[in-house]
Amino acid sequence: IAIESVYAQRIKDFYELLAHHYSENANYEKAYMFYNLASGKAEKAGAIYDAIALRQEGIACIEKLSITDETHEKLISARTTLGMYLLQMFYYSEAKSAVEPIYDLTLKSKNQKAKAHIFIILGAYYFYIDSDVDQSLSILGRALEMAEDENDIVSLFFANQYLGIVQSYNCNFELAIE
Image (cartoon, rainbow, N blue to C red; front, side, top):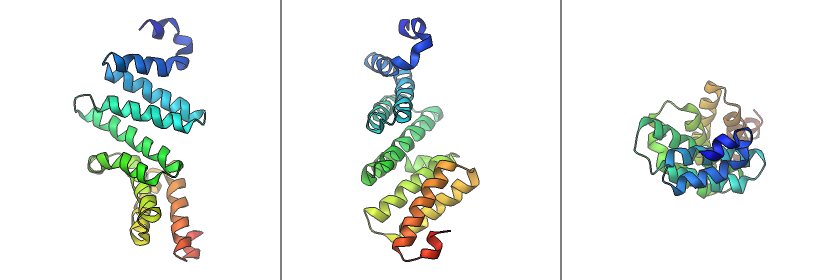
């Protein structure tokens, strides 16, 4: 707590240190919070590998907490964010593995953005890893519908990008440019 109060003006400089400190002291709620902040800071700095590692540490912390609706939402958010980081690095299998544990939980939730992200990750996986064009098109279409309903720019970008790639591969050039 001393670092948080003494360096309140520069707290961003200590996110990683505080996350590690709280994790080592089994204060997993605070550790998760600071790993989440540190991961976001790393992402903004373009340090995606650091963002991935920090997000994984945060997930390990949140998974040690008791199960509540709040921890479920945090887990959904953390795992879908990790999945999207991995997707951007073209680690399709790893991205799918990141979101698989929360698939059913997310489908039951009201978090449309998370659902869209999972469908984008799965659509890319089905295309690039399983070579299943039909499955990819189907699930990416669902992601695009959700992104449009939520007016979620990030999901719109990725859903359109991957749909365009899959449609082009499938020689549906007119659909690819829509």
